[in-house]
Amino acid sequence: MPGLLGINHLTLSTTDLDRLVSYYTQLLGAALAFERAVTSSDPRIAVLDVGSDDHLMIVETATAPAPGLDPLGKAGWGLRVGSHAELCEVRARILATGWPVGPIETLPTQWTMTAHDPDTRPVDIRAHRPRTPSPQPAA
Image (tube, rainbow, N blue to C red; front, top):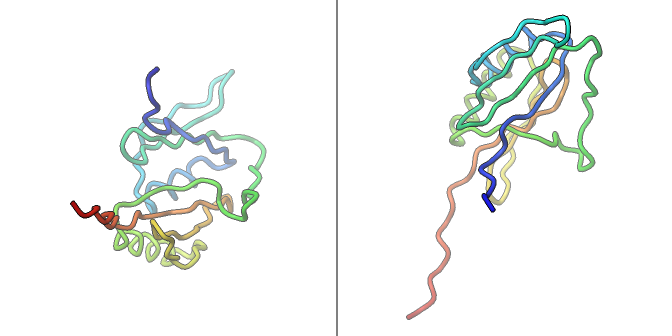
């Protein structure tokens, strides 16, 4: 059986596609992969490249999304940057624009902060901490 390689995409809905695309591309560094105009049978969408082969699909809807936290009181999904320095840089960019973002927390395997996008939806932004090698047994 073939193994999984990762997440292909995550879909978000919004009432303002341009605003949400701008947030994820200009502040968080995603790249617009493609956009599809509204048709008689399908809503307007944008697909953002968020690294590797992972994508964020944004669908424009007439109804605002539910912005709540997951059952653990967290965002329930997250994006990853390459280093602690990059995480600090993203946080500074978000703060400079006035969008809400929490402090950077240190977890056992990563640094994390929670931002809120223009639809007030929480998103965790994380950087993995360097792994320390496991001690080798004596020969």
